Image 1 (spheres, rainbow, N blue to C red):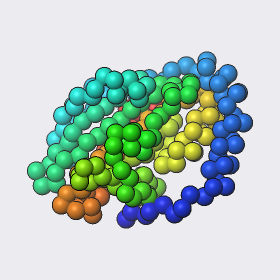
Image 2 (tube, rainbow, N blue to C red):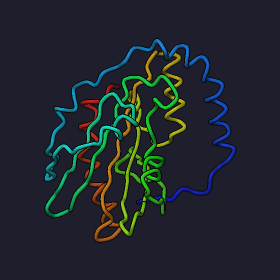
Image 3 (cartoon, one colour):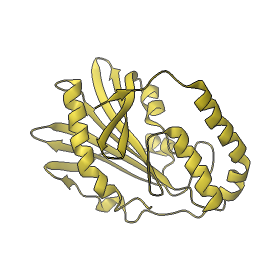
Image 4 (cartoon, rainbow, N blue to C red):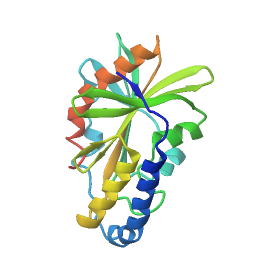
Length: 215
C-alpha cells in the first residue's frame, strides 16, 4: 500500500539542517581521510535472472553517469512476459567526501529531466522494508518509481537520515560509503498494476543487494 506524504514539517527539516551544519566541519576533516570501501563484488556479477524476470545491462550516457559522481553503478532492464518491464539503477559510492559527491536523490534528477511529480509517498515491499514512492509524468507518459538507500547495513528512505548517518559514521567509524537503489516502470495498464509490479520485483531484488553492498 502506498501512503502519500503529508505536508512538509518545517521544524523537522530545520532541525535536520541544523544537525548537518553542526557536523559539517568535523565531518569534512575526518571524512577526508576515510578510506574508500569497495563493493563486496563487482556489479558485473549481478544476476540477470531474478525469478521469472530476465535482465540485460543498459547504456548510460557518460555525461549523465559523470554527474552522479558514483564509483560503481548498475543499470539494467528486466522484463517478464506476463508483467512488463522494470528498470533497475544502482549507484554506489565508496566514500562521500564533498558537496556534490553525495548520493543523489532521484527527485532532483527526474525533475531536471523534465518529469513532473504527481504524487510522492512511501510503500512497503516487506516487513521493515519501506521504499520511497513517486508517480511522475512527462509528455503524457506516467512512470512509477521506488527508491531507497543502503548505508552500511541500514535500509533508509529518508534523505535527511541518510545524510545524518553518513556524517555519524564518517565521524565515528571513518566510513561514508553507501548506495542508492531505484526501480521504475511505466504505469501500465494503470498505476496500481505498476505499483504491484515494482513491489513483487523489489522483493526478489532485496536479498541480492546484500551480496554486493557492504554492511
